Structure formats: C-alpha cells, structure tokens
Image (tube, rainbow, N blue to C red; front, side):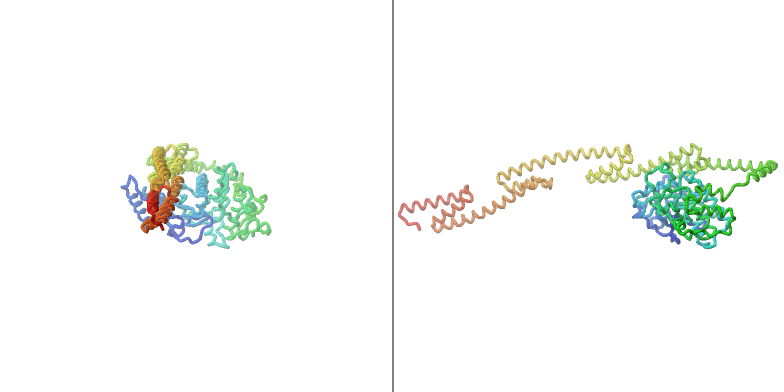
Length: 604
C-alpha cells in the first residue's frame, strides 16, 4: 500500500499506546549489531541508495535488521512488542517506488519467555494461512541476534479504536458501519473455516483503510478451534491477555473457546460503531449477565437489524449465534428468490447487458491470470538470484490468487526450505567460528559444546564434518601430550620419594615442586613435599643443637675440663650416634684423662 500521509499512517496491535512518538529510537534491542550492506550487482542507483541508508543507520538514523530491514518510525506498541514503519532495502535496491513494510519486534519481557520464538513462528504461520483481503498480510518471521521480529504489510489509514474515540457517543455513519461489518464478517468467517478463533477481537485489532475497507489484525493469540487443528503442543494464546469488555462468559471463566466467542465480540464492535459507546459500558459479558444489563435500543436500526444485533449481544452462549455465517446471513440477508427470478428474466431480455457482464467477467479472469503470471515470473527470477524472501513473497501472492497452482506452491515450499537452509548454514558458521576460537584457546570442552550445537542443526554440514575431524586430531594430540606429561610426573615422583628416603630433603622438595608445576593438585607430590619440608626443618634444628653442644665441648677442652668435654660429646652422640667429631673429641678427652691419672696428676 502507498504511504502518502504520515499523520494518518498507524499500524498497531491490540493494546497500543496512543500518541506513540514517531522517529523514536527503538528501546527493544539489546546492543544491536550493525552489519555492512554489500552485493555483487552494486552498480545500480537503487543499490547506492540502499548503501547510503545503511551508512545513515550506523549514525543512529534507524536500526538495521538482517542487513535488510531499516526500522524508522514507531507506529504503535502492543503487549507482545512494538511495530515500526520499515524500509525494505531489497525493495530500495530494486528501485521499488513503495519500499515500506511494517515490522513487529518482540519486546524484552516477551522475548525472554522460553517459548517466544515458537510464539512468533505460530503467529506468522497462522497469519500466512489466512490469505484474505480483510486480514493483514504477514510476510515472515526471523531473528537478528537476540532480536525477534515479524514483517507484514504496511497499512494506510487508521485503527478503528481511534476512529471511535473521535466519534464517542456519536458513532459512525450507518453506511460506513455496514461496509466495515461486511469486511469483518468475511475475515472472521474465513478464519473460522480454517478452524481459527481470533480470541481477542476488538476495535484495537481492526484497521480501516483509506478506501473504507477494513482489515483484522493480530492473529498472534488466535486459538485453534480443536486440539487436533493445533500443530504445536504450546498454545501462543496462553501468553495473551484477553480484553474483558469484549470477552464472553466462557473466556472470563477460562473455559473452552468457540466460534460464538468471536460473534459476541463482533456484535459489541458493531454496536460501538453505530452508537459510539460500548453496549454494556465496557463491562464483560459475565458482569452484564450478573447485573442483568440490557443494551439500549438503537434508533438507526430497523426492527430486523436490531433483532439480529441483539441476539449477537446475548451474554449467554446458548442465546446467541453460534458462528459468524449465521450472524452475517441474518444481518445482511440475501435477495428474495422471487426478485432474483425477475431479475434473471430482465437479464435474459437484456442480452446486451448480459453480454457486457460476460465480457467483464472474462476481462477480470484474464487480468487475474496475468497478475499470477507476473508474480510467478518475478518469483522465478528472485529464486534464480537466490533472493528467497522475494521468492516467498511473490509465490505466496500467486498461491493466494490461485490455490490450485501447483507450480507456485512448489516454488513457495522450495524457497521456504532454501531460506531455512541458508539460515541454518549461517547459524552453523557462527557456531563453528565459536568452536574454532575455543580450539585456538585449547579449550576442547568448550569447542565440543559448540560443535554439538552445530551438529544439532546440520550433522552432515561440510563445516561441521571438517571441524569434527580437526577436533578429533586435537583430542588425539591432547591425549598424547597428557600421556607424556604423566610419564614426566611419575619419574619426578619416584625421584622425590627416593630423595626423601635418603634424607636428601632439598632434592625431595625440588622434585615434588617439579611435579606440582605439571599437576598442581597431585596429592602424592604435596605429601612428599610436606614430609621433606618438615624433616628439613627438624634436621636444621638438630644441627643447631649439635653445633651448640660441640662449641661447649671444645670450650671445656680448652679449659682442660675433660669431664665436661666428655659429657658434652656424649650429649651430642645421644642426638646423633654417627656424629664423628663428637666421638673423636670424647676419645681424645678420655685419653688425656687416662694419661694424667698414670702420671699422678690430679684431675679436677
């Protein structure tokens, strides 16, 4: 869609913040990484413009996701995240006159939920199955680092809740209300046929385009009508908060949902469009039922129209329409068969009119086929250039226009698979790069962890296989190095033990230290070192005592007090029986004593 009036361009989710500042720097991202923009066909004016936009983003003018999506203005805030007006640089490069789309980015609180990525995928998958002119078109979902986002068409107009706020207590013109209501009925009936219940239908989730048509937004918490229709065990709706003013008794009580829940919400919206106020003053169906409230009769409706709307507003499920088709058929009844027969009679008479109608139908069919052919050509060209996003976008339109087109369906599936494979390859590259960094740091456990993550994505990926071989070589080398290291440790331990046994304590300590340098936690080395250190200390203390006693013994000898010298030497020998200087001194003192006795000298 075109984007010619910024003042009226708003695309929001259910619980938007009014008056969101435009041009605000997104606060959803945590340290976003700006990437460079490059391409092989870089000589076009479109590419030059795209590259310049990337440069501007690096100076704070917008934020770039996936080297492609440039987030510019904030369009609105919702429970899941923030919606931005976004410039698609692929379209800029292709010189598309309307390069804008919308991007919903999950906010920090929501993306931290363990099922956030599953939720975003489910919202996208649900929305992509709802290819209908009255339902917003969702292109794809993706991640850029920790940032989760979803891309969709950019709408041109106003949310219904803003229109109603401007016409509070007045309402919109009846003709406008009926046109919007027909579109809403068509959208919900289409979703119900595919077993999806919106579950959060309200003015904030309805967008009125400039041409007067309406689109339903935010099937993010839409519920599968049956458990069998739900493809995942996780239900994204579990994370969404309902809006009480449009919730049925069953929704308030958290009972199983039904198509009738959307009927009630739609009837409330229709009443609000006509009257400019909620039928039950913004109270839930449960409160309205308990307080026996009745919506005020609207004079602008005929008796039949009021009867239909009233039945849709009945709080008790059994009293209202069970599906949208019943409600729509009663509110907008088909023409009387008799009148149709008369009209057909006139048509038979008016051959020229019939011919023109047939010609118009033929022209419309030809135009449809031409559009499909153009989309298929564009999709095939994009696929040849390996631009899978473009391929998916173009082939998706073709399949929506012609669901029986097997070529378009096959191309769509192939492009989606190729895109997924490319994303997987990119993720594998990132993981292997991390693993290689760990390997460079010789942290094999770290390298193994990242390799396992890469193997979970692509076990037979060539990068994975190659790194697996490199890691195996590194493990073998590490094992060999460990074995050699153990031999060195064992030899040093043996030497330390022998030195300790031989009372060579310095040798024992040095050998133990050599072991601990290789293995700081080696218990045997610690034990030997402690024993050697203790013995070394005791030997030093013993030597000091012996030296003191020997000094005393020598002093006694100098004073010719031989009995004293003998006593001191014997004290030394008690400490160390092998100490030769003490034995020699004792023998010398005793010999002198003996000679003195023989000569008759008195020894004092």
